[in-house]
Length: 179
Ligand SMILES: CC(C)(COP(=O)(O)OP(=O)(O)OC[C@H]1O[C@@H](n2cnc3c(N)ncnc32)[C@H](O)[C@@H]1OP(=O)(O)O)[C@@H](O)C(=O)NCCC(=O)NCCS
Image (cartoon, rainbow, N blue to C red):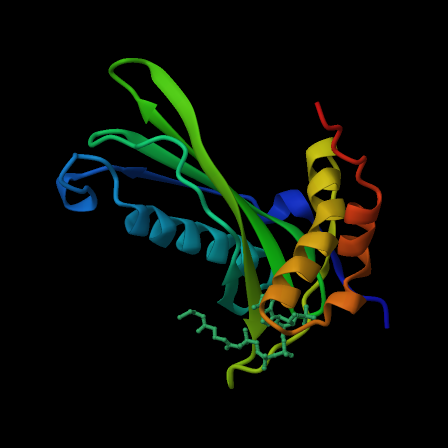
């Protein structure tokens, strides 16, 4: 039977938080752990919206913190499912911060989280396919396969030799020119 399909945009979620004193380190910047907690929540909601299931975090890709987020800033976290496989879903999260009194807004970081839809006993269960529509959604959808292979190889769940999309990426790279 053909799998159910859902548009990528139907999983979109935006969460807004204000950085309060209890969220900060001694430099009055938002703590990385608090931001990751918010990222986990917003992306879990996106995965739930796509699957209409209970979801668990299976993995988190590399997160780097490009700019500190200051006490009093308003943080917006946007999450959307990029692609679904059998039971797993990749979610893209983009974080922006805003200093409203100064009228300044900046992008802080982005990341990919992977969630697995589970039944009441915690067993993985199939989810609908994702239908990307915009150029950005199509780009994320196309890249999701190679990112999945990379994380499964790193988690020792896939043999590097089986990661064909990933290998193709390196095989097609232009050699670096020496000066
Ligand atoms: C994620 C979990 C449900 C996978 O269960 P499992 O018995 O290993 O199931 P499977 O081997 O059938 O894998 C299920 C899916 O998870 C994906 N998966 C498992 N580990 C993964 C990882 N490290 N990164 C990305 N995807 C992963 C598999 O690729 C598979 O995806 P697919 O169905 O789309 O092909 C299980 O490991 C789990 O419950 N982990 C704890 C989750 C949790 O508590 N998270 C909160 C952190 S405290």
